Image (cartoon, one colour):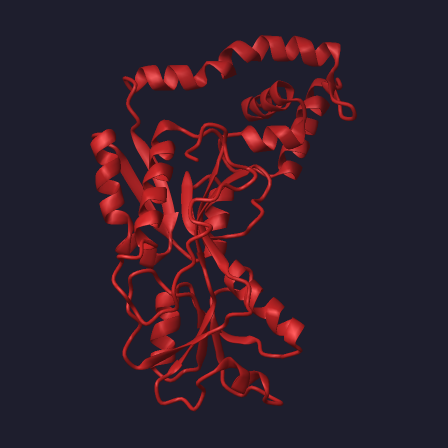
Length: 320
């Protein structure tokens, strides 16, 4: 028998169905993959292991689950025993700006609680980071997130940021209404990837306004949006970066009627002790970034009301 198929069946049997199993498997895997591989196990054995609706193990499924349950249920225990009770590694994904500006001091605090911890960092756009999480290549991502977490993913909201337009200081545009009133916007639009929440929120509101303006340049970070706007390559849609002053040759145009985006954390499976500490440190960081005493910038004022808000798929026992 394929051992991986047995593992998937263990989670299905333990949690009472495929959808629930997907939410608890400690690495990224989609529902169709679980369904297909458990079906392969049933085909190999020539038996039906469980009834789908309502869920119930068959006698053959009960017998197989009782056989494999002692092994799979004790994997976490033996892992901890072999590591001497110490966490060895955590893999974090985030944008270049977050990794550079905000996480170094956070890592110092985490390492005080977990000496010898190996930290692996991956950078990318929100879409790329979501893919890495789903594929099980990272344990936790910090990025722009959707209000509703994908199936099997836990979510913690940290900051709510308004959308803004970035134009060159020499641009004739001083308000968004000047753009919306034009029959055709000829300036190139610079944006994060269209599959991400920032670009989706922006385009959805444009559609409500009856304005057609689509990205002609996609970049992977708000840093790059600033860079290309500053070099005269178009108008950028971005968010105010906490405690960061925008470049001197860029004008910031607020978009008060546009839906904001949420910066938060996503993770899959159980909340390990080291992930728990990371979440607590991230909440403390978000609170510091929105304190009134933070250095003033020419960005619009950051809203405070949603800092640290829990999403519906927050893991029980995670920081409030």
